[in-house]
Image (cartoon, rainbow, N blue to C red):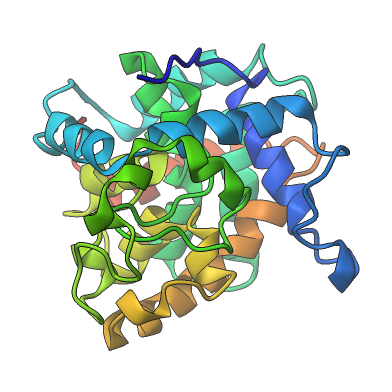
Length: 283
């Protein structure tokens, strides 16, 4: 059994900032995906915990635990304000709140003329971080996501850290396709557990399919950024992942120190949320 403590990051946003730096479009090609002694130790520790703990059995247990959405009921705005209480005082790199980041993402999407459902997706895409209020460790809330139940791609960040993952000793999970059929489609693949998968389950009945893909796979960089696991995708995935790629830059690069005016924007976003969601949803 592997013993793991669970708080390697100063805040959940520290992982987001690391991802943003990792995929900075101004970096030279040879600077991409460089993981060495210059990487903050807390980030390396985070990925060690993540890659050790995200087993097939762990993921199946979380899918079962959260799949029935029996952890409470609240509105989208209530959830956003609750998440704000977690992030505000803990982020060492910015004074912006979770709502501010979400508004920046959504406003950037809106300025480029994308449909209302995509603006809404930008606004709510990180709400799955509500998992922390259920006592989930950081490595099961944030982090790049990836398929479990099959061989790990070497395009996952720090693939060598899977050496301590117990699935290493399960032959059925260590082949190219593992427990899956080739071309089965991502909807039939179990992904490492985190805020993406959780929020997808909370919101899927209310949003169009491209929005579901954006929420569910926006952290799955090995697939939508690196082209890994193509042999598990079907044609629907290939079509929908184009929406994820459209969404991703808004998530990564809209963050700035310019604070949006919540007072001015809130009426619009309240109406937008109400157009797609009931007053209360199950979590």
